[in-house]
Length: 122
Image 1 (tube, rainbow, N blue to C red):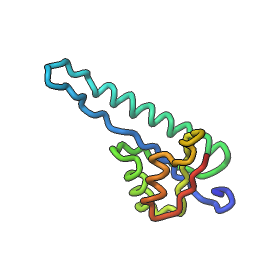
Image 2 (cartoon, rainbow, N blue to C red):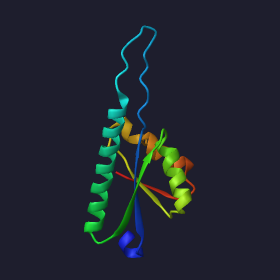
Image 3 (cartoon, one colour):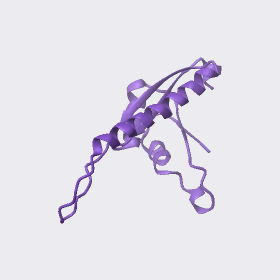
Image 4 (tube, helix red, strand yellow):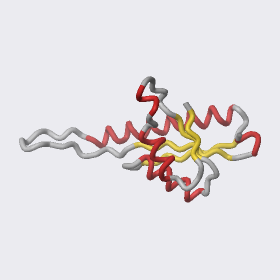
């Protein structure tokens, strides 16, 4: 579709910020979470870069958005609104049986809350 209409794709990768660990009632050593946050951001950046490479290798225009947010759905809905996107395309995890009847939480949330059309691809 992007090739047919000359569209620029916005590939978005949302990752959760590192949260301080729950220490409970008893004093426990708190693991160093800054290192975990750095690794999470680097992995997210790597995933996004691979996606952009795949798209541009096919001769399509693309750019990436790396978003750190607590809610993936909210972050993507806000990005779509800010960028005035025409269509959100999101994948599913390919579940089988009863789980197949229910969309994943992100795809379901996007369908429910986005102001633009959402294409869910299995």
